[in-house]
Image (tube, rainbow, N blue to C red):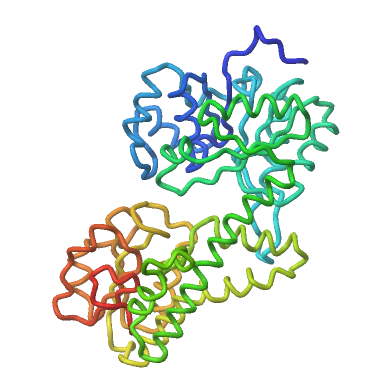
Length: 402
């Protein structure tokens, strides 16, 4: 059945619209006058959103969500029939990597088949998540085999988690499609957010997202490797860093060292490596450095203290500062390593709600040594109470050497 304009109830339906990518996008569209439907299987998140509660930490999220709901433009848990009643469908399902660090198409294939009967000819299908290069063509072939005349667009998100609502309108939007009609529809949709539209071919758009994340991951690896080198020779890294970056533009993009993790950077670097026939040596080297940082910290600590007789406190369990997301957090990896070597491990985070967490002060009081793993702003005023303190991010300004 073809899409009749008179049957269109929603401008856009976001499948996977309760997550970190889909919900801010849904809110942003709704606040700019688009009629938005959210389809998702996470019933707990749906209930929270319907009550006006953000299911995760997002700058200006609660107020923006309530405003979007009050406008009447945002429909939550509309059900799969909303797909049929929408002009455009944004699919927030990516291609993760499997246990062999290879891309897996299972999730996206499953969603497409699950909702196959709800798609209609003439609709725009927007692929928003990170994709293995060539996935958009795979989706187009799926539509053709299903007898559907869909316009497939690739419009990757490139926001920093926790700041999506701001960055969706501040950053350029990449738009690509396999058809002129799809490109025009995608440009119209994302021009709602910004006039700064970058038009690419689908595979170019898929690579652009992977390049963005792999480049960030490599830069973090360089900083972490530099930190390890300085630390091994008893050199104050921050003094060297100041010399490299102070009023010197060609050194200004060097980040500071620290845990570089989360659900995107490592995964996307490995997807790019798989696409490059495992010849992406810089990416593999970055993985070894960044993923190896927790092991490095434990080794350095073990050389100075008898871990077998110590209780270690870890401050910060999310994968980065000021969020509540622990997906692929290196703090969790650090915890697991320490649990095999220490008398005990105590964890704390002001944002994360997982079993066994204690307050910041209790973690400090009960520990023989404290590791500040994630630089939440609240940690800038803590007192180590004279205990050994490993400050990976130099939050307290007393150095990060071990």
